[in-house]
Length: 112
Ligand SMILES: [Zn+2]
Image 1: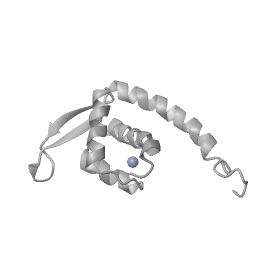
Image 2 (image 1 turned 45 degrees about the horizontal axis):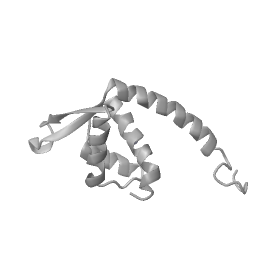
Image 3 (image 1 turned 90 degrees about the horizontal axis):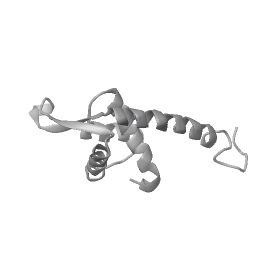
Image 4 (image 1 turned 120 degrees about the vertical axis):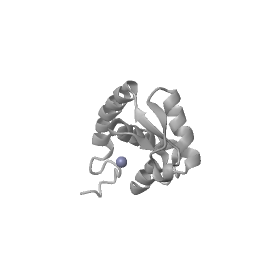
């Protein structure tokens, strides 16, 4: 993923957001992220999911109801993960107000 160091936090938040709504699994996340312009490989995603689980943001369980009964791991946000998401959402709102302001990205002032 290009600019991984900067965007990794966005990816984690995105994953947490969806995991707070319903159970998600790796392949779905990869497709969802690609819809949003992120190219993320399983080799990057799975360690990220494991780290988020180790940190207590996510919990997972094996699931065999997927396509062809192939076992997969589904993830869902924990109570702590939801709390962290709520904090991140506030910060994001604030950051967005600053970064996404017209002209905010271009101090030359050529914005609308
Ligand atoms: Zn999404």
